[in-house]
Image 1 (cartoon, rainbow, N blue to C red):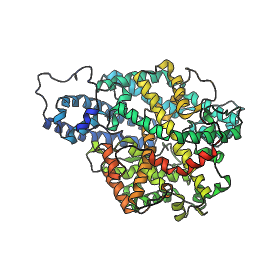
Image 2: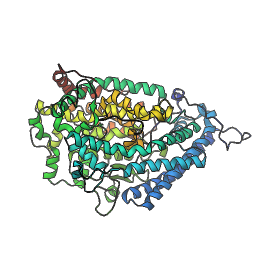
Image 3: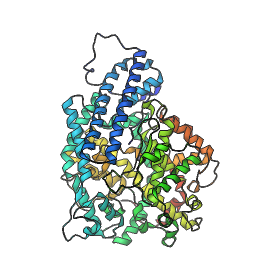
Image 4: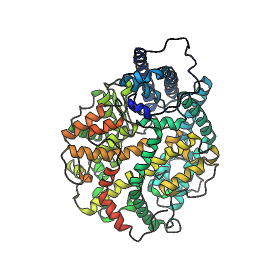
Length: 622
Ligand SMILES: [Zn+2]
């Protein structure tokens, strides 16, 4: 639960953030009214922040209750909170446009707040009430179609053994993708889940029309342009910068793809996984083939070393419960010098799945008061994956903690990728050496083979994700701009998935299908590029913090644990919130002023070298 991202400020940088003027002047402006002054702008921003605090706190409180006690009534309360906020923000943006004329005279903080306001709504509501209601209804219905999605296999299907019921939900189908190594089962589970999105297809086309109308009314060409505007540079420059980053990491991705494909060929045969062709998407351990760590058992470089990295077994054997895992996560942050989490965090958070009611278990972090009412909502199990998850979520909470005293419009990450990257940065310091020190690994962790295994495990998660993290929004940018029309939705989707990820559907897809809708963030209108950026940033942050900690050595083995120097840099960056353009924040942590994939490449240097030797003689690419 995070408000969306940051923006071009009103500083000189504003000139590189062009905004198309809206088609018509705001209706309620009186032409005879005197031109606004700087003082009017300051008062407007102050009043808006006051209103936003009230609205956002109410919205989030309803959202929290809804996600912790799912009923029709709490759903209605949560939706009402969303709608009230959307209506207010749309109107406030319209009213704020009267200050465009004096933009150059505004003090930087006022100008920046006005800009942050203009991008505060991820899906801008159209001005007319009918369109606004229709858009809200479509959004809710798509999220709910996704949430209720299930596949009911025939009575003889082998998939039935994976469920408790006749029909399988996403969790159970994902479990098939993660654990089955039977080609037929994998394809059936994949096909079954993707069918849930077909009914969204027409609604999605209408949603695009309405949201674009809202975006144009607040001065953007379309919703994609609004989403690209949150990065302190012109949308076109931002797109180019993202392509540059992808170009830097692409060779590493291709090497990983080549190696994994060869392992899958050994498992499933070359007829199913041919040379020089994209990999069938259901074979990679994940419904969207976005992270491949679930097939670590297939791709492990040195199988006999495998057991030495099994943290999950140890967590279970040592009876780690959820609370102990969260305490361990908090301990990492306090070791860096962060203040402990407040007492209310422990009283009000949800740490495990309750037995008596429906909750949204998708992990999230909250500050309900926009001022220190920190919480997490997670359903922890004693697994390594969940130990990483809790570090990730606490990263959000400690970000909230650091910027919780700022004006509410500045209470955001330096950009949305920053917010996602913080906890992951900390998790990079949870090295095998560190795990050994807290009793979660016993075996010797120093060997070169164990190191390559560890790198592979990380790469299957972090490197495999990169093209997917990029293409979701590439598809949406093209859809919002009209470059891809509804008649070509699915073909465009697969063209991108083939081009960037090198994966293919397991069978013919048509324009009857709507495969993008089978991904949560498309059905729920959540921008996605932040996750791509976060993957790049976290290594950049990690390298800078290791340096601050005085660490000398390969950065894949660095842990910043208990380094007050690294902690001070991290805290300084987090304390800025969105008050400054993100390159300033990056500079504060000591990582330069540009996004740089070099740190990620440095981190994976041992694996890159290993893959180059391993892939020699193989026909890579697709
Ligand atoms: Zn997150």
